[in-house]
Image 1: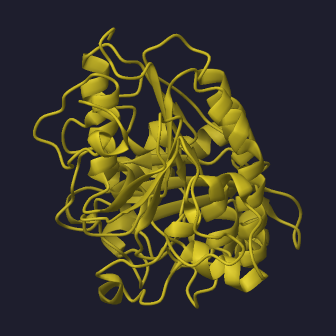
Image 2 (image 1 turned 30 degrees about the vertical axis):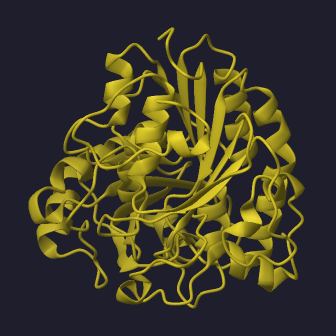
Length: 395
């Protein structure tokens, strides 16, 4: 890859970072959703000088973050074209897969044709089988689960089959095997986007989720940008749930993270690997700990904590380029605890010249195409039109 414009690219997906403005938000019941803007408003403003320097304040009205940008940066917004507003759909579209039909949802819980084969396969009845907040359902049913050993199964406004068990009642390998069983059973019209293993710990009245969550996604329906990179000799390193989202397809090596900070540390470690390289990181705390729990204050603190780590990441690029985006919204000020249909940020650092205005892009896939081009790889037949030429590269 000696002719590649840059030696490495880092893509940071700040899970659920939305900036409002989706043209079809009303169709999804999300009119007015603006995760970053509404979070800032709810807490009286954000202090994010490093994100501010990348142009974050240009993307939506964010109290405390003026609309400015410094040299070496680029800013814009991305519009999701796929049907749906879940993690899998968003990440797949970034890497060139557009879904015409959304994954199935279960607002009334899972039907008998799902529940009964699952119970038979694991030799246990289940508890729950309702849409619920994860923290609320373990508080409600955790004690009964400990007493009976029955796993807690629940869903949400997203296409997920979630299994929650206490670590002292169901060993992690058993929970993961139950999740794999569910993944095998959920086919055809019931092909949910993800089966999620949700271990928890603690005593009644003080249950907390533990960090050993695992996602069991359906494999992508075809090759992605990741496959093109690997075929061209560019290693792809996944941090957090990236490997799970793509079912390992196109991932050279992946490591799970326990928190945003741990994810940053793993990312910094991968940035030390020889070039060429693509490091693909998902930082999930914004979504799982604060967005779904309608906690704008926690969300704001997590944004500011990430901002403080940003100089380390930029400093570790070694001549490469950093992109920051989101995969959907999860407005913590909305009445729902579910994801929200929003445009997402497109921020870049490590550029020559600028600041550059990327504009409002018509697809999440524009980002994946751009990343491939910066690494000297041409992708054909996938979603997206690259914008490398907009940010100072001749490709």
